[in-house]
Image (cartoon, rainbow, N blue to C red; front, side, top):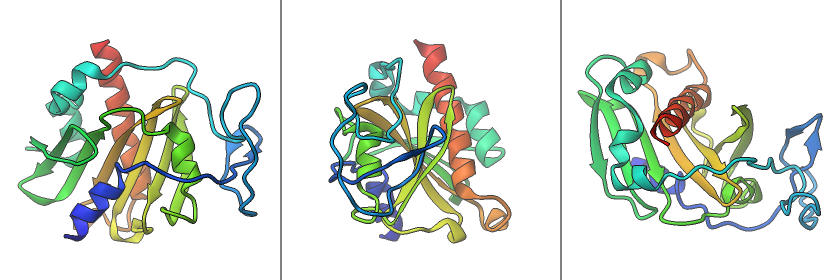
Length: 203
């Protein structure tokens, strides 16, 4: 049940507004709770990174398990990683596991626009306790987030912004042996790197 709640939180991005100022070009969550209007130059709230080139993922929504190759999944999880499509209220999804529940990575596509990275930022201290911008992947924003912060348990979800209004949810659960040895959000970002590589190869 706890895992089901986590995966749902990794994909349900219907959120409310908050401020996210920029420091040296890097988006950082607001500390004052103010809600300034959108930037006139980008149409986005201040501090929210703009996606300059949107990506179409229609073909991957039809076959979500094609978003990671077997080799990519094994790079992330280890030998014998197996893919299985799964039902998710947010949209098409696939889960990869190795023989048991851990380690695991889930990739979830929304059925339509979800508000993009702006919605994730806007949920800081509201729907999500954890909202932390990570290093972008080739200009595409990656943000760690969660209803609660479970990094110490080896559990992290990230959103990969593929347009200003759409994200892909990537949730990673580390093996027990790796908990505490590597930030699971960094590991989830590595999943986002491979997801983006597959998308680009497929478009």
